[in-house]
Length: 246
Image (tube, rainbow, N blue to C red; front, side):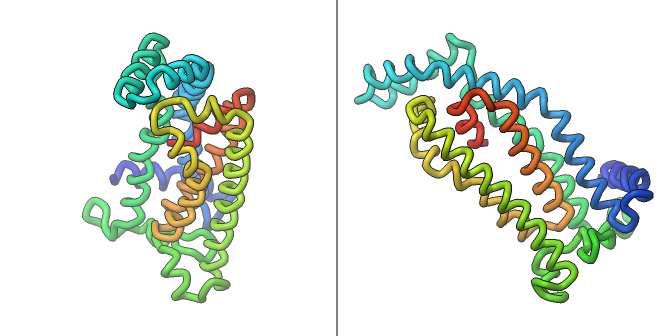
């Protein structure tokens, strides 16, 4: 983890002339963007896979009609169809899964009192009045909701709420535009699609409980994902709706 801490500090040093005391926070945003750039090729591959699955909707509908009374045979026939078309139903999860190590590194870096046997100086770095190693509960106990640190969290909550609302409305429109294609991708997907539009709002809970540095990672990554999906799925409504699942 000390190597990761050195990377964050080096980025902060480069950004200090522009962001002064908030340079470490800016470094976290830049680091998140670099991680998202690294996994972007996988996101593009996942988008192609989602579009391929959307194009299989007529064949999936035929399988449902043929095996509708036998869920086991339906699932087997569906997976055989995916195998013949060289389409993976789990491909869309890869970009999200590969980001988890970076998130957990950020979480542990700003939760650890010591790194390499030395005090963790990064915990005292701030975004305006909020410590990067602090949490929302700390902000509430130090000035309240409208205190200096509290206002930083209000801004983050506002960004996440705006992105989640945008994603929710867009997903609902996509699902309405192609309900059959979205609902018949694989057995059990229909139930998932009912919950899927609400999933982005769960990010608000994450922001409230993790260290501010990890919250910055989540906010940046969530915003990136929303913009990325608009670009990658602009011509495929059903595939865009399904892409929200991971």
